[in-house]
Amino acid sequence: MRNILDKSHTRLHSIALVLGSMSIFGYIISFIRDRAFAHYIGAGELLDVYVASFRVPDLLFITATAFISLYALLPLFEEVEQKGRQVLQEFVNTTFYLLLIYLIISGTVLFFAIPVIGEYLFSGFSKEGFATFVLFSRMFLIQAIFFAIAGFFTALLQYRRRFFVYALLPILYNIGILIGVLVLYPSFGPIGLGIGVVLGALLNVTIQLPVILHHHILTAIEPSRRMLRYVRRTIAMSIPRAASFLSFGLAHLLIFSFIVSLSEGSLSIYYFAENLRAIPLVVVGLSYSIAAFPLLVSHFAKGDMGSFNRTVLRTIRHLFLFIFPLIAFVFTLREEIIGFFFETGRFTHEMTFITGTIVGAFIFGALTMSIISLCARALHACNRAWLSFAILFTHSVVEVGAVFLLVHYLYGSTILTFVQSATGLTGSGFGTLFAVVLIIVVTEVVTAVAIIAALVRATGQKARPILASFVQNTAIAVILAGFLFVVKSVFFSNISYASTEGLFSIQGLLSISALGVIGFGAWYFLLRQFNNAEGAEFRKKLHDSLRSLWN
Image (tube, rainbow, N blue to C red; front, top):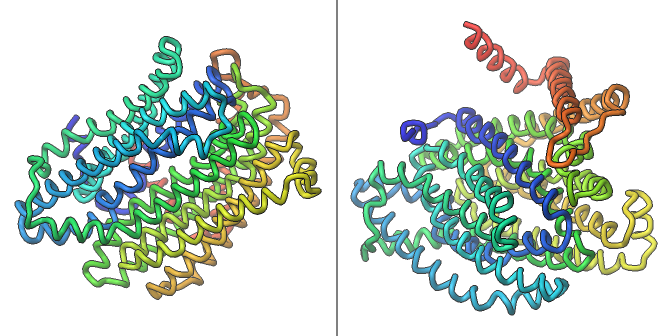
C-alpha cells in the first residue's frame, strides 16, 4: 500500500492523468455527497447555514498560506536541499513549528470573533439558524487547522513528485462528509454534519503521514534559529499568493452574505450550481495547472525560458482540448444531470429547474477560472507574483463592487423583470441570484484575458498559437453542444431523469451514459475533421493504450 502512495510521477501528462482520473472518482463521491444533502436536507436554511459556515474558518486557512504556499516552498526546497538533507530537515521543522503556533493563536482569536462577524454578515438567518452557524463555524475551525497541516504535507509530497496521495485528499474529505450526512446526522442532528467535515479533514492529514515519515523529512518539531531567515523568505514569497487568496476569500464571504439575504435556499442553489461548474474546472483545469507548476519552477530555476514557454503553451492547449467538451456536455445536459443526481426527497423539480438555469450561466466560468489558475501559477513560477496579485486583487474588488452596485440597482427595475421572464425564474430572489452569477462570470472573463495577456508579456510567450487553439476548440465545442442537444431532444425526450425515493433512476443513468458515449464519439470525430494537433496526439496515445490492453 505504501508503494502505491509513494509512487513518483515526473511527466506533465502522467501527473495530469493521475490528478484528473482521481478527480473523476472524487466527483462520483461528491455527487453522492450532494445527493445526500438534497435528499435529507434540501435547499433550505439548514443547508444555507452549512455552506455559509465554511467562509469565516476559511480565512484561517487562507492566511496560513503565508507558511504553506507551494509557490514559495517548492523553489526554497530546491535551494535549501542543495546545502544538504539535514539543512532541509531543519527548514521543514522550523516552518512547521511556526505554522502550528500561528494556527493555535489565530484559531483562538477567530473562535471568539465568529459570533460578531456572523451577526454582521449573516443576520438574515433565523435565531436557531444563527446559533447553528456559530456552532458549525467553530467546528470548521478545526477543519481549517487540519487543512493547513495537510497543505504543508502536500508541499513536501509535491516536491518529491508524490501526486497520488494529493489526488486522494478530496476523495477522503468527501467520504468524511458522507459519513456525517448518512450516519451521524440521522442520529445526532446538525452537529453530525460538522463532525463529518472534521473527520474528512483529519483523514487528509493521516493519509499523508506514512509517506512523510518514510522520507524522514519531518523528523521532529524543533525550531532552528539559523533557519528563521529562510522562513522569513518563505513568508515574503508567499505574501502575494496569500493576499490573492485572502482577497478571493473576502470577496466570496461578502457575496455569500448577500446571497443569503435574497431568499431561503438561494445559497443552497448556488452551492449545487458551483459544484457542477467545478467538474471541468477540477478534472481538467486544476489538474493541468497543478501538474505544470513544479515543471515550470524547475525550468525557470535553470534559466530555460524556452522550455518554460513550451510547457505553458502545451498545458494551455491541452487544457482547451479537454475542458471545452466537458463544458459543452454539462451545459447541454445540466437539467438531466441535476434531475438524476439531486431531484429526490426534499429537492423538488422546481429546484432542479432553478439550479439548471444558474448552471447555464455558471458553467462557462470553469474555463476562465482554469485559465486564471494556470496563469497565476506560471507568473509565480517566473517570479512575477506581485503582478498576479495585482490582477487577482483587482478582480475581487471589481467583482464585489459590481455585484452590490448592479444588484442594488436591479431591485424594482425593469431589467430584473426582463431577467425573470427570460430565464423563467419566479421570485426576485432567484432572478437576482442569476444576475449575481452572470456578473461573477463576466468579471472572470475579463480577469482571464488580463492575466493571460500579462503572462504573454512577462515571458515573451507567443499569443497567436493560444488564440488559434482557443478558436478551434470553441468551434468544436459549439458544434458538439448543438449535436448533443438534437440527439437529446429526438431520442431521449421521454426519459425520466428524476431520482426515485432513495435510489438513482436506472433510465436516467443509462441515458446519460449513452449520451456521454455518443458525445465522446462526436468529439473524437470533430477532432479529426478539424485536424486538431493535440487531438491527434490524444488519439495516438488512446490507440497505443488500447493496443497494449488488447495485447
